[in-house]
Length: 309
Image (cartoon, rainbow, N blue to C red; front, side, top):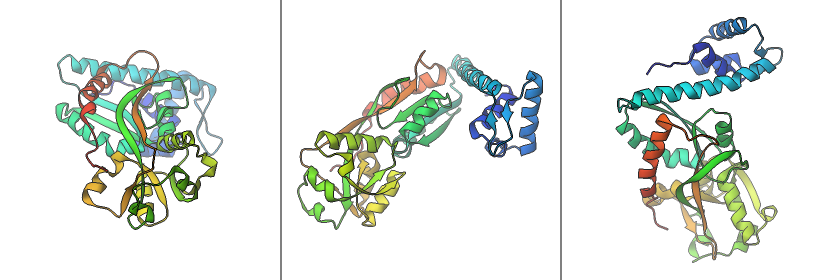
């Protein structure tokens, strides 16, 4: 489907997002002079300077910040118009802009997006991956229309609703002494070398809150390494660097195929959570975003990680 948005505004939003003419050119597959020419033409049309080019980054001027707010809103409106026009013929088409925190992006959404595209082959999903805080920021900045996060947001200016059930499990190297025991106690964790996700991760926040409810303060934990992905934690556990908390969804395939780590039961502690769908406050998203939400309502409830403890 044709993009209804003025191309100069597309370029403008890319430069504002990247804070760099060079990076915007790479994102849009243009030359840097072509990007500069589009911005210059836009500035001449408006009679104002949109970017301060004196520093190492292209920072927005006051006029640029005003335009960016309207450009984002216009982009959303035009995208919605494209979707609704396509839907009149029963043929959903266009770009679906999503964001998901790491575990969901890697282990949950790919299969769901594959099923959705089988029904709507003219839909082009784009998926931004980051931790929970980054996905919430992308929603607030209107860079995506729908997000999926692993823990509660730290801000109240977005809407959330449960999307999928998950459990956070402790894993240890297969040869670790804990794997031979029926279970360990929460206090055993205090002396253990822990591998944790980075600050801002939903998995880390949920884990720390659950441990605090059982009397284990976060400052008492021996965090020996912070890692920015579940795959990195799994690899570090396999290498014998410590024990770590991961989503059951993230290890379902590993457990079926057999890997050099095992689940460790913690007596009296089960860490359950809901993956959350997050959207901006205000009117419900329409068009393709609404169609994808309907699809999720019919599919996601039946999705469960198939591995058993």
